[in-house]
Image 1 (cartoon, protein in one colour):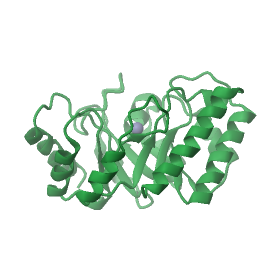
Image 2 (tube, rainbow, N blue to C red):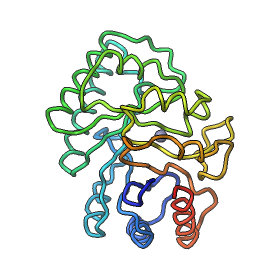
Image 3 (cartoon, protein in one colour):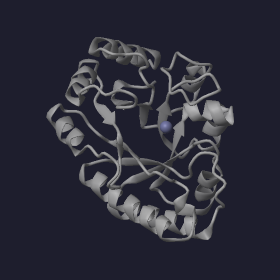
Length: 253
Ligand SMILES: [Zn+2]
């Protein structure tokens, strides 16, 4: 049973005024919001989202880390060092804002960057830092997951968890159940969106070939947050957004 306090909406795919979004979420009984953050100067950060969230009594417990090239971290050199430093700086900022869980990808696309000692060393450094500042790092499944799997095999920490992205699992690994069962003890957060098994559409939950009844039948007791990463395609008014929110909640209960 998923409760409304576990459902998190995000600014995925829309540009509505954030204060309006917070009001709509509150009126639907939703308490949590999530977005992407990085100290990278080229990323448009939105510290005002945190400030407004406080004013609207919205919690921001789960965030997504942004990096342009998730492969740098596996390659020797200053780009990887720079990215690793920026992840740590971003985690520090998020912690100051009260964030509990930071989600990140361990690699980009159909990455062919090798699994390297320097990469594992950097992830160890990041995860040790998470232990120090008391934040959870959740690694998300993407196109291929060898890097994620290697991190899970090599690094053991109570602060290292997994984010199961159901849309990615349906599209790329074709077996959501298998991935869920393999990592069920680690999955603390999930990203929910649908697709037709061809593209990473990030559709609403009832628009695609994945049947969310399967997901809802899993033993989800370790999962703390269910982040909606559906793009409300074609929605142009706040009324329509409100309907999208209400419909999404209904599908999960
Ligand atoms: Zn995701």
